[in-house]
Image 1 (cartoon, one colour):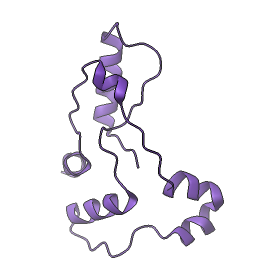
Image 2 (spheres, helix red, strand yellow):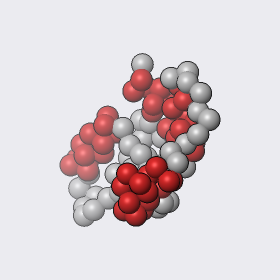
Image 3 (cartoon, rainbow, N blue to C red):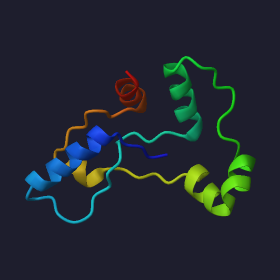
Image 4 (cartoon, one colour):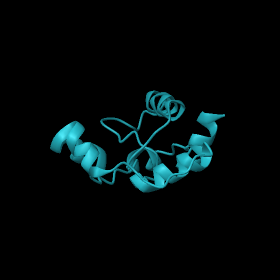
Length: 104
């Protein structure tokens, strides 16, 4: 699952505007995607709550149908290759650090 903080998105936009060699579409995502289970465990640890279960696929299917399965549970590995190659330095490269900053 790809993720991104608002602060990082703003930084990416500013970087893209200042970097003449960077043009066209870029993947605005953090460099380290996680699974749904990893996201659940990290969030639970940071808010000091038990995380016995992640989002059950049956609940997603009932609430959102097949589109929900595709959007919320299916994996798609997206990497910010063009931003990295252009020299963008990530402020929050890993989810635990990013959520820790957002939640404090």
